[in-house]
Image (cartoon, rainbow, N blue to C red):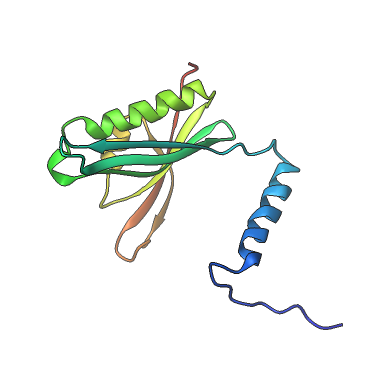
Length: 142
């Protein structure tokens, strides 16, 4: 019998999507189906320029915040806090029990802590010389 071969794939290779499907099928055999629902919020200025926003998703009763960004001149104005508040509000309506995200020591750990998030994991030297943090917070029933 021939040994299986490990092959590096490019983005377009059909096996990439097939792998994701196989993992989802396995996961669903142990937990209920993952109903992915996007959360997309954006900030536009009066001229229609994108100034920030939040991208995430809800699934398995959790909100995962993937991206939160606010342009430098608009930071400390409450816009970031409002983005997170709105995302959590959406998650509450969808029946989520918690929110999670990751951030780095050079990003916004303190900001998230002020919003009720706490660190549940960290990885030093990721990237080298910095620390990556995984954070969570509970969401009260809507």
